[in-house]
Length: 357
Ligand SMILES: [Zn+2]
Image 1 (cartoon, protein in one colour):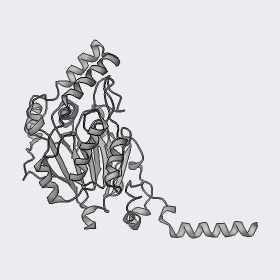
Image 2 (tube, rainbow, N blue to C red; image 1 turned 90 degrees about the horizontal axis):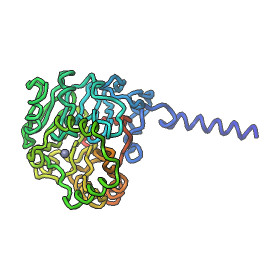
Image 3 (cartoon, rainbow, N blue to C red; image 1 turned 45 degrees about the vertical axis):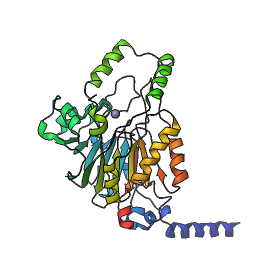
Image 4 (cartoon, rainbow, N blue to C red; image 1 turned 120 degrees about the horizontal axis):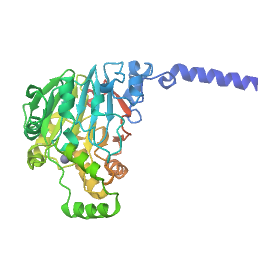
């Protein structure tokens, strides 16, 4: 028995010495199961645990910054809000945080956001831009958006010099520190009106009606966004974001059809490492999955992180698992990630598609 124990001890020592898994690693990259190159990066595999990848506090509201300059931290904060933290800088994608009492709490308020280097607005509906002006005014961050988004910002207390208007039709590449940003004209989602009408009636009949106070609160929030029809065809911008390591991110904040501008841009850039992509609003999983498949085929992400799937009290959360299943049925190698508000997901961007070519 004694001899057996000592043999086991020797084996465990040998395993510890030869396996990078046995030592600390800064975080678990979601691609690790699919991509052996991550284990081959000794610097990543042996670094100590990184608090920035383990706490649910936004870096923009005082949470830790990642230790390694090549670690990207992504946090989803409801709808298609994401925080990207990389190489000492913070990018906000969309800004809709003070959503009102009919929404689940995000665990922070727009006022808590103190440090931002740039804000990219996908489109100008209130549920994508309502807090952009206030945060930009306080932090000095530039805000990027379509002409119709900029028109709305012009009515709000923000220095016009901070607003960068883009059409997404090419030749508008912006650089924010280590983030290179290419705006691409997308198209807003257009869920079938018959479905929207039917579900609206059903929800009205079955969900708790908002109070007078809640209605007034929502009216105030809605005013901080645009309801202009131009948002659909001319005001929805997808952003291709490339880090200095070559790691590529595609942000698409509405579940609409892919445009020729997007097809051309993706043809030029090749597949992306990470897709931050809105789930369509068509209520039925079959329709939402169809739209997710078109997005996957166009952007070809290694990792798919959905957005716009949470909802106010009187609407339905959009299911992500049926989409993940549809994506994996066609592309078994795709990695799908969906976390709760503010939970970090970290990537070792030294490993990316552009380096695998
Ligand atoms: Zn919208």
